Image 1 (cartoon, rainbow, N blue to C red):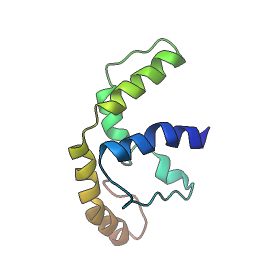
Image 2 (cartoon, rainbow, N blue to C red):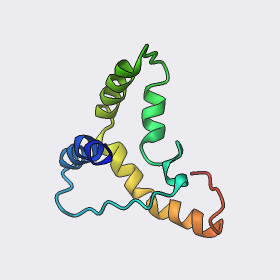
Image 3 (spheres, helix red, strand yellow):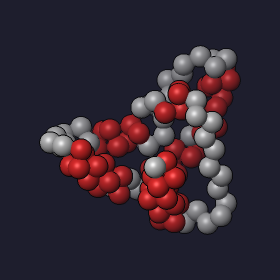
Length: 99
C-alpha cells in the first residue's frame, strides 16, 4: 500500500516539478515527521478546510484534487525554507519549533 501511494503521488509530483533524478527520498518512520505541521500537509489542510466529504471515497477524491492544486512554486518555497527549518531545529536542540 505504501509503495502504491508513493507511486501514485510522489513520482507524478516529481515529474510535474521536473526534478529529474536529482532528488533523494528519505523517510525514517519517525512519528514527528508525519505530523500535520510538516511539508505540504498544511497546504492541503488549508485548501481542504471547507470540504465536507461524506465517505472515504469522496475524501480520497478531495485529497487527490487538492494535491493537484499545489503549485511547483509552493513546493520550491518549502524546499528553499529547509535551511531555516534545520537551523531552527538545531537551535532548539531538537525541541519543537515554529515550523
